[in-house]
Image (cartoon, rainbow, N blue to C red; front, side, top):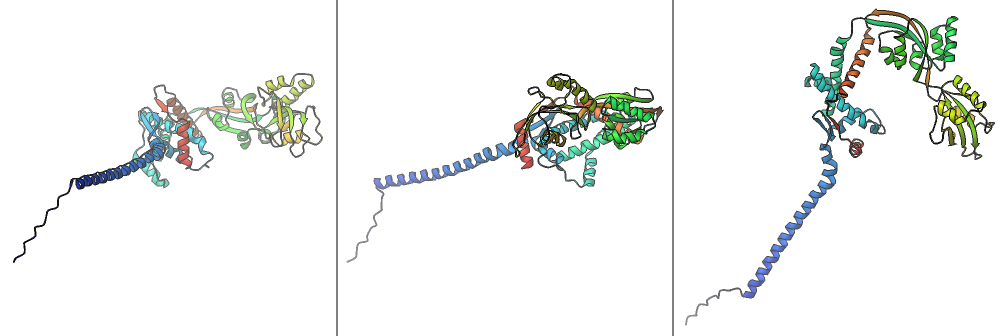
Length: 422
């Protein structure tokens, strides 16, 4: 008897099974989407972190415009490169003092290029490349522009301003020395009249290093050169206004490396380890002035009133009073008097000469030997074309048609400094 063939019964999920399967599929989807969401959120957080902690504070400011000159803009990264280039030979402590001058140099450089084009002068990329190659300099845009400005200014002086100098002009041969007082100048004049040489007395007494270095002989020059070489417009104007002969002239703005103290010690500390003193002082321009003021004090004039009128050291709140002065605060000669062992209290000093101090005002003793018309020397021509360039740069900078914007506030300067010193 044959066996009956078994028929395999088809399995069908129950409603319960289907319900569980759908729940499992939903859980898997939730887990999948949650994982994707977490990953996306992490990516977003990383991107946001980069944006807020790196791009916005560190990268984006590099693209900010910091200077604008007649439509030409300069970004922060350019400015940073320019500061680096122009401070490369200086210590990091000096760099902050260059932030504003470098910005002005960028502005002046762009104005030079713009206005030079109006005169028909420019510097090609090839000229810049050749100069940088000769100097073995690796250049970015800031260095290239700095080089271009330098070459352009040289070209303007050599080809433009030099051609405007006259073939001949008035030349004056002169001598000069700078002295501390009229009395001293009169005394020197008498010595010269008695046969002493101008050269020897200048080397002995002149308080101006430049005239002392040449023994008083300024040489033969056209107008404007004396002022440049000896830093005195007053002397320049006098030499080109006076007749031949010897003259005396007061110069109120000329500085000299000397001053004279009148000191009265009011109180001095008994602490030998921490010495200090309260003093009334005047710093005067010459010994003659100091003697004259001292005489008035002895005759009863008010110390503060005279100090306000004559002293180079005056405070609107404390007047002539210096409180708690310690050794080393002022200078060697000052300390020797104030902290000397035998120094009396409330006693007015004689004039004390101090070559560590600087005061303004003095007298030029100058002599004009000759006045003639002649050609300008090569050295003087170089000075004159440089002065003409400086005057031209000043004129174009002051042109009211310029549109110049400087956006370098303190925050931007701090950012640049951080990148530079990094």
